[in-house]
Amino acid sequence: MINGKKIVALCTYRIYGAPEFAFLSELGRLLSEEDYFLFIYAMNSEIGIVEDTSPEVEVFNLIPYDKVDVVVIMNEKIKNRSIIQNIIDKSSANDVPVLVVDGEFDHVATVRFDYVGGFEKVVRHMIEDHKVQKPHFMAGHRNNVFSNERIEVFKKVLAENNMPFDESMISYGDFWAFPCRAATAELLKRKELPDSIICANDIMAINVCDVLKEAGIKVPDDILVSGFDGLDEAFISSPGITTAICDNGELAHTVIEALSNIFSGDRYTSKWIQPVFIPNESCGCLRKDLHVTAAVGELNNLFYHHEDEIHAMQAIISKMLMSKDVKKSIRHLKENHAKHAQVVVEKSCFDFENNFFYDDVEKGDKIVVFDSYSDSEDSYAYDPKSIVPHLEEIMEAGYPLIFNSLVYMDKCPGFVCYSYPRRMLIDYNQTPNLTNCFEMSIGGYVVNMYQKYLRDKLQKMYQNDALTGLYNRLAFRSITSEIFSHESNIGQKITVIMLDLNGLKQINDNLGHMAGDKAITAVATALKDSCPEKAICVRTGGDELLSLIVGDCNVDSIQKDIKEKMAEYSKTYGFDVSASVGVYSTIYENGMDINKVINIADERMYEMKRRIKSNKNGSL
Image (tube, rainbow, N blue to C red; front, side):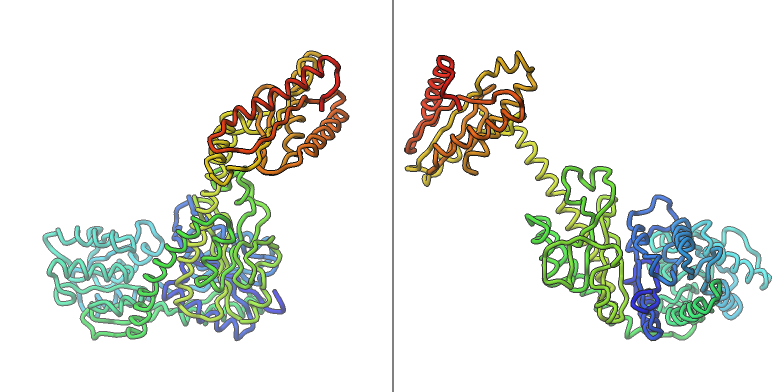
């Protein structure tokens, strides 16, 4: 419960389909009347019965079991028993009741369509009312529970009407267009054709009619056809398909009744819904134009809107992938296209030392990278206890929250939450496109930035000395060539400071080479930290270092800082760290040989080194 409202968590799939939206819209309206609030956890990709499931199922891990009052699972939408059982087990562990729609599980409440009874009405109408003599059955998947149930209904009605059955009377269309069309084409190769094809769902019935039409066979004059499910397409198609409707409005009302029973203490309530049989043209009955005008208008609206969305999203993804930082990347979406969305991702996505998508990175803290309810474009820490930012404000409007997983390169880096202040199919229809846009943009951005990080790292390895981090000779040549190719540097003061570590051999001989490396690094660090930020600091040899400064600088101050820093290192290390120094400044002229300037500074440095050897004075 949140803010005194009972929370209903609905687990489902593809909320943007017209039937699914009809159910969700009515359910949301009814729940708001009861002062309940709906959280929708939805997948956009079908996982079915396969075990190797998509990371998208991680959306169900977002359910806040400590706050929800009941979990509703759309079994026929998710279609994966192990995933559903996992949700049930987590609910049970948190003492949260579960209502399963269209499925049988232990210790849960159920709401089920009587598919067997509804389908039997269709089969009886074809065999008993139309008196067909050679019926053929277009089944779904082999060994699928729903397909097998409908096969048994077909056999039962045949037996009751004294009609023999054999396996040649069954084809398998897998509940979908392409396999059904292939199965129908094979059926048409037979010498004797059936006088009727009874299909296990409407999609197959529509495609059977289309294949028959292409073959010059008329429906229903030559062959009668029927379907099942009551899709809008069944009434738009020609001929209209004889079917039975699993009414989503009635389903929503029945779910509300079941929830009321659950909250009254009947946690294992069970309710059945009878599909409504509707004869139509495909079996020779009169045409039924159920919801055709509204459906065609809505489908046209969605189609053209979808086309516009695809072009817009492609442009946005391109802009986001080219952005230099996350804020600029996200801004392209925030301006026009995602006014009711929030995106939460793993903070580790932006840690390029361990790439989230390439490496086995443990999940941890998350950040909000997109918040349409905030004027700021800055990301901020995500508090999982809040579920989503601005929750109270969003709940006041009374409309559902919709959660999608973000999936990129077979990993789930986070989630997106939509909170539309209305119930419209056009909004729900754009959620998969927006989710895809977010995951492609964020994932692509991370991969691009990781490649840049690797490029910079390789470049640094190529340009920088491994011990000191200063530039190496090769990099120095390239950088100075670039600097002095610009005419703006003609007439500028240039200064070269040369350093040579004193007594490196003695340090190595007496204290070891690790101590010698520490001394070289100390002098290099002192040089870099004492020079201006834009100075070019280079390790030219074993213990020789230089700094090239373009522009005015205070050489005396730099030398003083270097000396003080080396004195601090001497105290820290317990041995003397000092260096000989040579400095030369001049005005850069076009075509000047920088090596000559360096040689002069080098000569001065060696003069100091010779003095040190003679009187032990003059070192930094």
